[in-house]
Image (cartoon, rainbow, N blue to C red; front, side):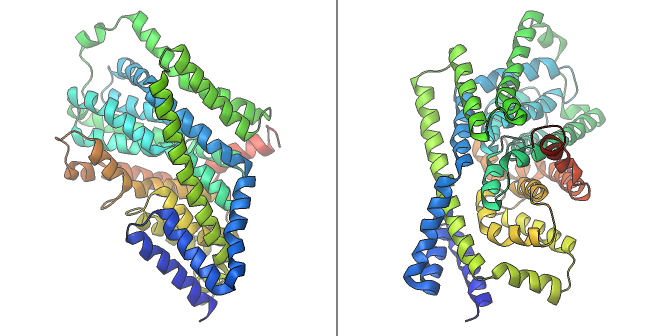
Length: 445
């Protein structure tokens, strides 16, 4: 059997195991281990050992538990509740204002957490009941929460971009900075869509009544405004020293976790129950990510040893005569298909050994491609029939919102996200300007 056929057999075996419902790290790791032993005998056992050593030596991996802990502390201590009350009070007089405020809430939650699941949980439990109670259209607000929560994997400190950095061997700091402007642009596009749609049809997003607005005195409004400063303080405490070159990435993540913990203590929200839940959840998710990365590195080593990437590059560019841009678009389409039944981490580790070297060989910037991958993953999260966010929303939504409402709610937001993806593909500097300026223009080099 030729190496090309072995590579195809490995890839198809892995996909088949994933479709049977096996755990991601188990499916990928098992295929890699069997293939390594079959190809190289007992010498193949060096591949997982080497992967473990590489992982243990990768210092930035310590950032993962720090950011996950930070997010859980803020979520479990109910600090996010204050943020929503702030948007509720200040954005209420505008048509669609609470929906716009929900997008703002999601951006702030993203800047404190880095996982879309946290945004979805907070949006569905805090924002959704309030929006429905005030007469907002159920389809629109369901779409708002799903779209807003997807920003968690693009706006720094994105955990997904940390994983991409690990697998693609790219600087995490540059990837984070590359996600800032695309993330804010996408949030701005969501807000513009909500505002225009509610201006055209005010019944979709009614304003708060004057009586309800007058119930909240100015002193309380200003107190709530301070709640919005907290995530900004945490974000700057973490990112400013890092951008200035005063701290390393790992030290910055520790600063962020410490600042979030101290905020919960000072607000009187930190108790044994909150601390224990945050630590247990952090440990569970951190271990899951580590096992997945280990499996992906082992699989990638075998795949690379077979020369699969060069074979695929030869097939696309020489035999089929496809241009680099056509190949890139086909890659993005494949992410959309996989996103119907896999989460972002699984998609990355499955195709990373194949796509990342190919993207580099085609002459594209891997920092820019990390942003494209992340945006495409966001779209895949919300694409029927089996988009990840669709089922998360179904699990958290009240009974009056059915699956048909959830599917219908995401159509306009997916359109906005496809437009954002196209803009980032056509104008790479949307993603690359900030990291280039900070690292090579006005910041530390």
